[in-house]
Length: 281
Image (cartoon, rainbow, N blue to C red):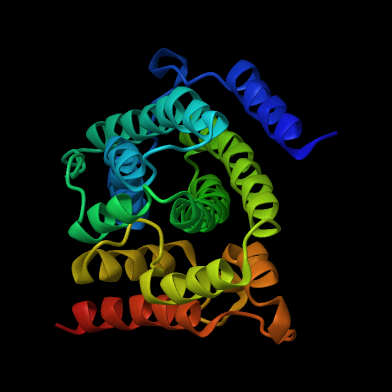
């Protein structure tokens, strides 16, 4: 099957088989709100914020990619955005049920750097570079989400919050792998088409711009470190390697044996260090 047809069929399946989750299908029964808040409250807040900021992510995409392929627009506007928004609304409603304030979100800020990329992307050859960065970011984001939701689901069951595990986190985490596959298929297809200078530029820009999911400033970087700690994510390279496995394979195949690119290792270790600094302060 041609790669473009395969990609379109995949998005069609996501649209049909994974409609946005419904709030009225969720059982918000909480056994011990205080214990849930203490153990995972800030994890829920972080995840809710990231999911709810999907509207800003779409603004960023339309700025960075002035003329994307039709299947990309179909995916992020008709499938991904509605699904992610419902994830955020459900997680935020859960926060209310355990006595937490709603997540504080930024849904309309587009950075100057992305605006510059958007101007340059009017040249098709440069837009392909921006598209590759979009797919790489999407893969890392969705793989991080899958791993984190799996750990949260396990942790909720351990503290006896079965209703939340099965009707909030379970349905959300089942929708994330399909998003990852879209980015992975897109990245593999585009990478094979890029010229050597485009591949070099992708590597360079990715090295300069990589950040963990949901991190836009130093405070959020520390927040991410706290999420890692709460979910029991190890500080070695294992988690980071899972997050960027396809990225490492594509971008750095000429450096075989590299488990994790240096910029990824640095970003995750800085998150842990910032969280520890905050706790000590």
